[in-house]
Length: 128
View 1 (cartoon, rainbow, N blue to C red):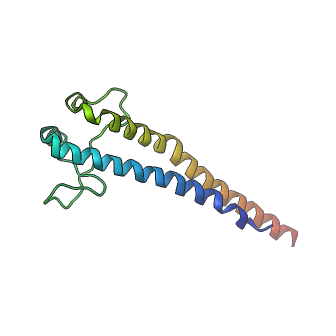
View 2: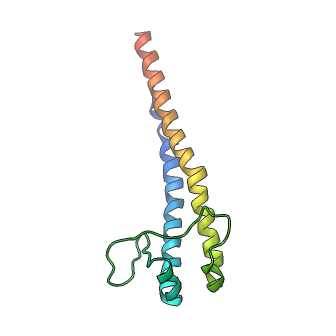
View 3: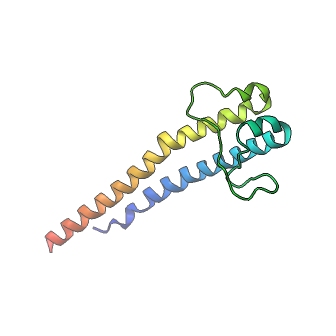
């Protein structure tokens, strides 16, 4: 039995959750850019973070985001930037979905694929 019919399963899982994570990173870039332009003091208090693709003028090395998306409570700066509340909630939900659902599914589908391929190859060798 040829296991190639199984390859779309882990590939589709990786593409699906990868695309969703890409949208999370773009949303994070938008929040950081908005903080930089509209709430510069908050941006400075966060340590002048850069995003995935966005960075402030003159800054070339990304410093990472300081959004604590796994915290149960809202960050203090969110009160001072209420227009970013919905975007932050979407980002937090998306990061949690990717971390707790997407990555385990991606890893599990690839492990299962390789286990099944190994078992099929082993049984094919024994049948010869």
